[in-house]
Length: 403
Image 1 (tube, rainbow, N blue to C red):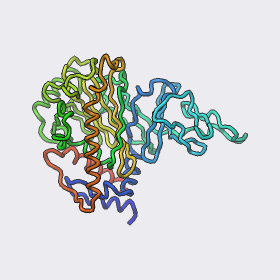
Image 2 (image 1 turned 90 degrees about the vertical axis):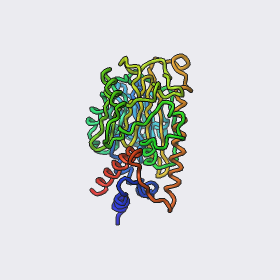
Image 3 (image 1 turned 60 degrees about the vertical axis):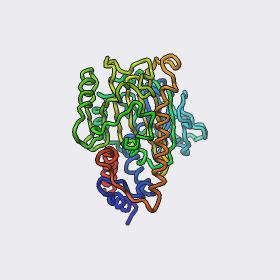
Image 4 (image 1 turned 180 degrees about the vertical axis):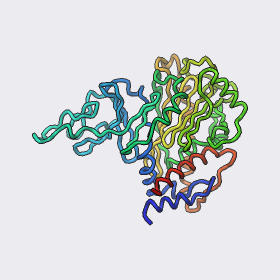
């Protein structure tokens, strides 16, 4: 049995509405196939365009085997490049982010323009043609400041996602935002455990006291059908009357979902007292309590939008048992720290929640690594969201591994 067939067999062993077999969370060959079948083929969230306001600003990320640099060009266009010099492969952009006049390889000082063209390569002789050695482009798309990158030779359609998500995000005016704070947390767990943990709040009671001051999970929006909650329907009606798309939109294949949910009684933001963290609004709806807009897009991001700020989360696998989770707190561009918001108040809830989730994921990884682990059943009441994610994962992997 070849390696792909062995991984396919593992995935097919999963029982309906049960967790995945042990090896799917820890085996290096499964991780290799996760990269090749998902991460190297799908659109991956990279960052926001307002992080690259000026020509020469860049950010970097690692998508599986591929180091990527996203750069704002002199023409204003945002491009994604394979972050490997065309000489001997050294990373050209070595920091997580920065600003440069030109892209200069630190190894032998080859110089590339911001559009990737090679401008200078010393001592290469008269027969060398710089036009043949520009940086290689990766696919890059932008929707309402969200930069997505795909490293596949042929990228999947992006328009379907763009058309679905843009009406939801648009009213939050992210084009006029900035990053108030960024956290980067390495979780010693498989990326699927990270996303599984995100897709349910069965664990929240007793684990997330800070978050539960404002957040209330609504089981009607897990994405697997079921009856609508009357309070949720009333919230949708009120928000949509104010011009904010709110009713659940679920991708046919289950890859992305957008919906708006109410927060706990009296809460309008993710703070310890539920009151706004920022003395500015993202939206101009006039509706004082818009709850939280939630959107995820597998395999790399989930997001929360409140009235006063938003949070974007990016998930990047770094190994079979290691995942980087990047969180960015987004506030209006003209909001001033110390005047319009207090940074500790803004970030306290999710800094605590992220670290609590990290410990849960790491505990889960330690447990599923045990030879005694046996996949258990998902709750039909509280774990429909995590089941939806695992169903999506198994469907995608099985289809691609069988090709």
